[in-house]
Structure formats: structure tokens, C-alpha cells
Image (cartoon, rainbow, N blue to C red; front, side, top):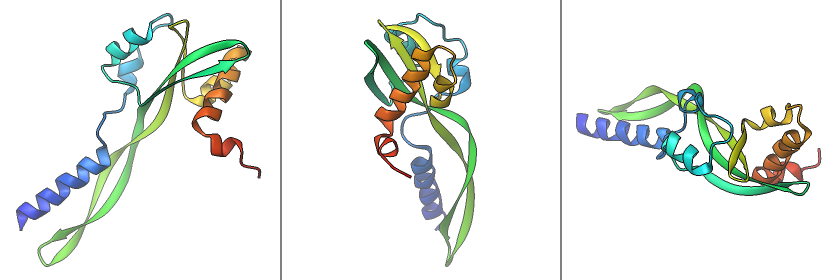
Length: 144
């Protein structure tokens, strides 16, 4: 009976935490402009969740998308226990999409989409809009 509880809890934790670990701020705090994609991937020791290219005017940027852990949130589940159930609260990581932009294989900007959009350089601000359009096409075409 205790074994079933532990197996259920272990499976629940595996589902909630996912397979590939997200980046944390310590992973990216020492990155620098000019790094190559290969160097960045080796430095953070994880492959990107997604890789794609977007164009801003006549310039093409290569984008690496990672998940970045930005906090935790409480998740509740009901787990069998004996002849009943118990409610288990687990602090699970809260993760958001984080992007690295490369021009000619040199890291030129990184951050969340809103950070790109607030950049004073118009090309980078437009790059944020292009990344959003690529990753969230249904939101771009939604008329409210």
C-alpha cells in the first residue's frame, strides 16, 4: 500500500517537472554578446526547445528558444492512500519562454518577448514582434 503511494507520487513528480530541465538565471547570468550558438548551447549544457529563423527587414536572425524557470507555483493532486485519498500540494517550477537572438552566428540580444519589444533599437524591438508572430500565430491573427 505504501509502495503504491510512493509510485503514484513519483509519477506525479515526473509529470510535473517534465523531461528537460529549464534554465535558471545562474545559467545565463554570465552570457555575453558575440557568443556563437554552439558556444551558448555548450555553456548552458542544454539543447534549445526550439530553433527557428525570423527576418527583420532584410536581416535574418537565428533564434533559440529555451524555457527559463522564473519561480514556483503550487499544484495540488489527489493521491490514493489506503482506503481513501489525500490531497498533496507540490511546489512546481513556473517556466516561461526565453529567447536568444543571433545575427551571423553572434549572440546579439536575449530575453523575454516583452524585453525585446521595449528595446530602443528598432530592429531588436521589431525582432520581438517577429518572434511573437512565429511562436504565437493564432494570437497574431485573432481579432478582438
